[in-house]
Length: 338
Image (cartoon, rainbow, N blue to C red; front, side, top):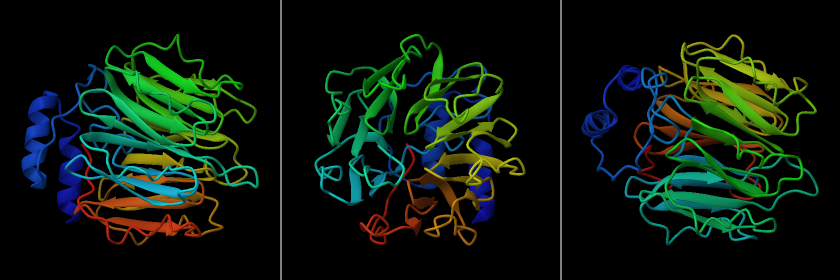
């Protein structure tokens, strides 16, 4: 199985027209197809990845981990969610035709916890449920969206023309993305937003007190993920880079190699290798980094204090805090990357 996963990851690096590549991938995995959202594939990135939500060299769009809940997108476009339901963040049972999901995450503290969930539909429209205190769920009017990202109190949407939409809290500048152009990947941390441009460079906006926005020198990126006070990026050569607060060890990714996907939690970072194994660095207070035994993984999502891993067979494994039942995904099946 590890050989098959490696082959699948390698396949996504090839320069093949997206519509042909999707058809072959569908046949290879023996899953039913969904009509994909129109995506912008640039000449720089097409060698090594599809953009976020479209391939394995990217931030996962099939899984999302929040402060108290977990979300998964199934092969048929429906969505599953478990965990805290206090603000209706798990009310996704009627969602259909979804191609990507995102969950608002925030670091664990006495004054945090409310969250929201976002779903991107194949027609480019967006749905949201959960806490809306800052208007972070006001996405009903969005059209032509190709990727979504959710952070604490905000939501970002990537348009086909490479521009970015934002709603929610902006007091730290995290929604100041109107000037961004030619974007292909987006991610939200607690108080900062990051993205990858079509030339492989990175942009960041928001709180930079721990240099979590110091990404201006990064090049050849294919993915990026923002945590609480740190940011990690994945280069086309399979190496990871990081910036921000190093106190928790979440930035200790310099030795990682052959990485094909990554995700930043509040205080930890996880990555998937081409062989389907998982790497982790950072805080392990809730055993959220106990992922060394996982195999055949194709995507990961890191929350505040828990971690999700998507197996090639569509099931999900978890590690970390289960106080709100956010790790109770044993019954999930058919979770699939678009």
